[in-house]
View (cartoon, each protein chain N blue to C red):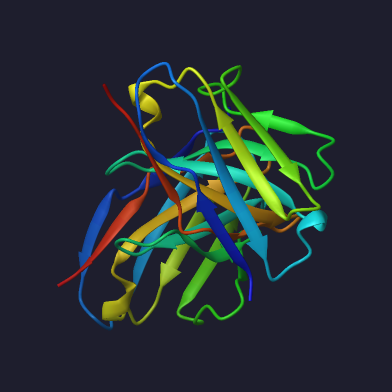
Length: 107
Length: 117
């Protein structure tokens, strides 16, 4: 199974700042990685697919990058509404595997 | 608008069975692969099953293999998850999600399953 090691587990930032979330795959997954945002009490929503492609309607403040084993989600100009838990997912191989999540708090 | 609506959750005793449904609308259900993903209380996401658009292939996580069965009825735009021999560790919110070659792009709101005596 491909393990997705996600970091940090949590972070606190101020509105307007830039944050990065990292995922490292235990083996190469090419670009077959997605990022999801889960706001409190809601189901997850896709932000990024195939590592770098923004889902329809997602603000361009959200950027995905990476290839192979290392992937990054960058949120620029953080807004208060970005309070959420962020998950990476590899869907290159079965079983699909998620990272453990990063909780973003807004100061 | 794509909609996925799960139902069938509830409180059940260990060892019992339950069948979840996910009714799809707003897209051509028979053209998409479908997944079940679960989330234990205060925990992360766990993929548990995938079924191809035509039911030709089904895949399961080891944690549910042999106990859970994924199926679909394209004439009813409905995805199912039959869960047998339920354990306390199966307590979770269960989500269905649609996907194509670009991956999962829409999720339902979830169905809550609690396994407890």
